[in-house]
Image 1 (tube, rainbow, N blue to C red):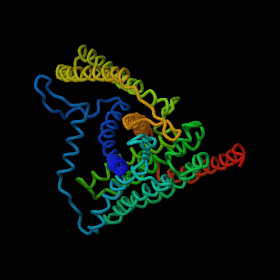
Image 2 (image 1 turned 120 degrees about the vertical axis):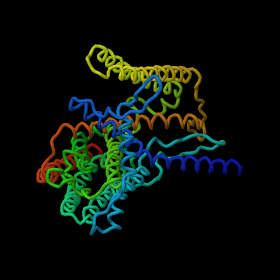
Image 3 (image 1 turned 45 degrees about the vertical axis):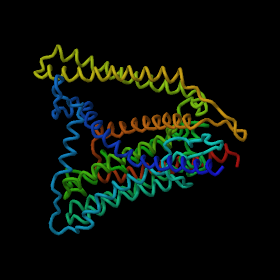
Image 4 (image 1 turned 180 degrees about the vertical axis):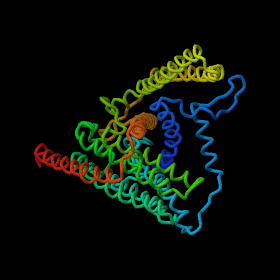
Length: 452
């Protein structure tokens, strides 16, 4: 009996330690968002985007990886450049400020539920492991508290730089953070009233049982999304680093990897905020019209469908590739032979991926048949089923988050920059009033429909 208990503790500890790897998900978002933004900006502005840097591979020639090589070169350049501090700066705070937003990003994922609680049988006992790294009853409040600390990096950087442009940028950051955090909290209160909890996983469970937050709270969703974009300091709300009047704002005096930390912190916050919006208003890791019990009882088919979706996505990519290849064959571009040779490598890799996904999907549907056990009157599956279900839910959440990341990019390269007084006017006189009115209406509706 002691061996079973010890084994139970061991598997709980292993999974808990493994969940700390989610702290690096924002880093992965950086690797995705930078090329997505550059290619997205090129698409919106009707131009190519990054397409010059390349690596050479025998026979296939110059491989650019759709701009990934350019991003790797830029990151390497920032990493190896000399870090220089101007005369007169407060060196300790000057060095500390860029690390604050990036450090906050590594802590924030600890309260995000990446999947529903894993419930499985092990050694004749039922084990339940939550989907977040830190299981707390005030997850959403802790997440907002951590995210608000990132503004200290910009404020301290502006003050420590001893530059009037940097100081003005820091002041604008603090003013905008205070302005839009009020709106964020009021928009969030509508969902908290409906779900009756501060736990993000329980908010997701309420949406799964009732309706997504974007349907229950459409006004709060749009106000929350606008306030989130403003919180990250992205265009059209990038008045804190407005080049026309402040050179570069609070990071005017920064270069090399110190500037890189600010840059990485911004993109990481986009990833975290996109995940948060997906959790609060788009059902989080829940799959539309499909319950978790259905996924678990038909795990083989679920994994087969997932592989099929991946294969279709690769086929869509190949379709675009073949269409561009036909266009290059008929155009007068001087480098078309180089591009067509590069595309041939992508075609080979794409078809290999389609075959792999198809084989894995068929094998999963044919050979994975979960066995259920009844323990204390509850249907419980094994560890493999719980792990496979968690994997599917994690991918669903990330897909929803990546969609919102594209919304961030779309807004930036579509709308012009607002003036500072316009930003304050929007936050205090428009969004705040709409959020308050929405909260009052939600509270009245919850009271009348809830009956208590």
